[in-house]
Length: 281
Image (cartoon, rainbow, N blue to C red):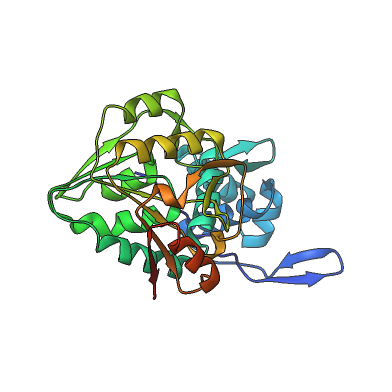
C-alpha cells in the first residue's frame, strides 16, 4: 500500500549566511526521523554532523536514525550523511500534486460520486481528482473498478463492496501510474459502464491535454472501452495546454469542474453537447 508523507516544514529564519533553523532538541527517535525526511525533501542531502548539531544528539544517534530510515527504503546513506531514496522522492512529489486545490477536487469528486450506481463497472484513471473519487467509493456496493493507478488501487484495496482490477504496465517515473503497451493491451480486455478521467489541461475549444504521450494514449483507450465518460478537472486546468492532445470534451458525456471555472468557458463547453456540472464545496 502506498504511503503519502506530510511535507510541512519546520520553522526557518534568515541569517546572513542563508536559511538556518532554530535548534530542535529532545525529540523522540520517530519524530527526529520524520524531521530528517522533511529536511531531505528540501535539499539534495544531509550530513551526520549537521543533523547532530540541529537535534542536539550524538553522531552515533543520527547514524542509527539513518540506518532505520534506510532499512525502510526511505533514505540512502552516503559517506558522512544521506540522500532521499527515489521512492520517497516520488511520494513527496505526488503528495504536493494531490494537495493542490484539494478542496475543489473533493467537491468535484463528491459530484462524480453521485453518478455511480451499485453494480457498475468503472474505470478510474491516474489523476489526483479521480483519487479523491476513489476515496468516496470505499462504501460502494457491488462495484468493479478498473484502474492504471497504483494510488487508486491502494485506496480501494480493502473496500468490501469493490472489486479492483489493476492494469499491468510500466510504472511512470515520478508517479504511481502504469503506462505503455501492456496497459493498452490490458484495457482492450474490458468493457465498462462509466469512466472517470482527469486532464492536465483543457483548451478553450474543449481540447483535452496530457503532459505525457503514453498517458494520453491510455486516456484515449479508456474512452473507447467505456460506454460513457466523465471528465473531472478543477478550474486551474481550463485554458491550459500540455504536451499531448488526447481528445476533446465532446468525446465525454459529462464535465465536472468547480465554482472557480470561468463562466464564458463553461458556456462554450456546453455548446459542445455535453453536460457541464459545477461542483460547490
